[in-house]
Image (cartoon, rainbow, N blue to C red):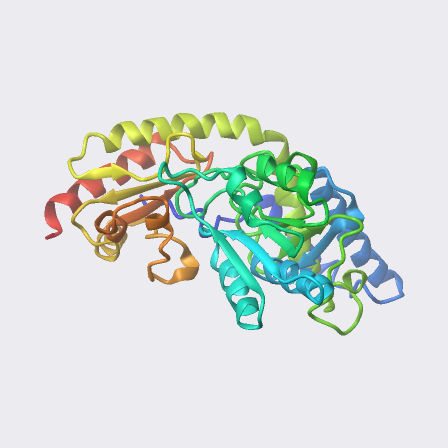
Length: 376
């Protein structure tokens, strides 16, 4: 029996998403921009998906824009906002533990002359709204904070921070990379006080190649891809009806059970932590109040990549961190106060509500064997 514990990288598409995708490929294959009935049917499918996803975050359908994924959504949020407001403002504020698609986009804009302020956790490993407020000024275009850290599961104080910033600087655009929180925790645009939110399909049991950028009405974002004026001109290019349909069906399936699945995940995390405590040399890097979907640990003295491949040979699939880093150290763990030695031996376990205790047991026994057999 194989065990897949790399769901923070990608999830297995649910049956409903796959059926919706196949139906759009084989039956509803029209171009949404075409004026005939076949095109209209495709447009209606996109409109329905837009409403389903909008409802899931408390937004209006007109505020949902489809992209190729969260990386594009993050790029569009930053580059589009800077294009709109960058002539008179020049500062960007982000957390120091953002996903590469946020951090590297900020770095690219920094090379173009913008000022980027990165806020790190304090010595206790936590982020505080006050630090972000102090980094903002009248010259700030956008502030960005992810909802759930993709490497540790740490739940960021997004709503608290954005509300505090907005009280003092109401014109600053607030952006949240909501990828690891969406469909796992409640994501609501008003609760988060977010002007823009990035989402991804393949992290929520849909398929790869589709994402969303929520843009609050009234927020200016300059298009970065021009052409056929799709998505109300913000993101040109023929909409992928199959991928969009799959995304919405996954959301439709999982949205009503967010709280129920979260409670189940708390039990799974508790059981996992209990079993991990039985193995010498294992330390847990994720804070106790982190998202139960992600647990980061260190197999102290064993390099991450070696342990990863040992477990792979046992048909247990985990990762050593963000899949986008391809095994390269991101530095995120160190920013959270994890010692370099432990960061070098870190592995990320990311589960779903379908995870069974038996799978955790298989992982524990494989990990125990790896600790015994892998040379330090």
